[in-house]
Image 1: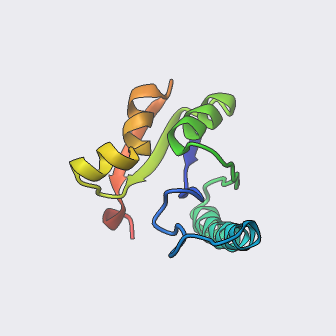
Image 2 (image 1 turned 30 degrees about the horizontal axis):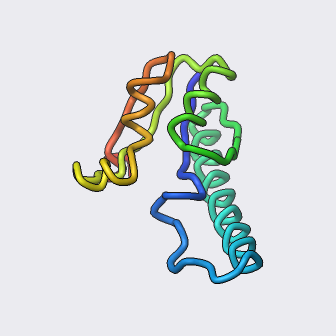
Image 3 (image 1 turned 60 degrees about the horizontal axis):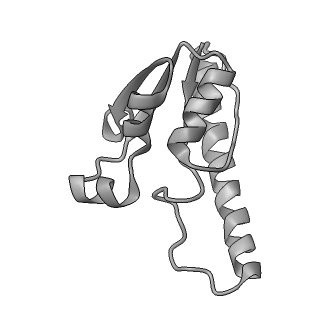
Length: 119
């Protein structure tokens, strides 16, 4: 069993283009982001199914690295496959790196690939 992770609502490349000005606007932007993520995950699921790989969509909110490790352990994943966004050392230090967290904290093996290598 393996686990493939999409980006999260907070902190991903698809994060809000500008900060929301109200709770209502925040909720609307969050709902839009969630729909985008669901669409992207369905697309990846279809690709996996066409190749004969079982694929299930799970969308969870929270700290990406911690949630990935939590879901992997709960689902008894043999390994986690994820992409690196190619952040520099300074950006990683400021915003953190989910892949770095997972490599050091997941109880199963973690394979990190450069995003450009899989498209």
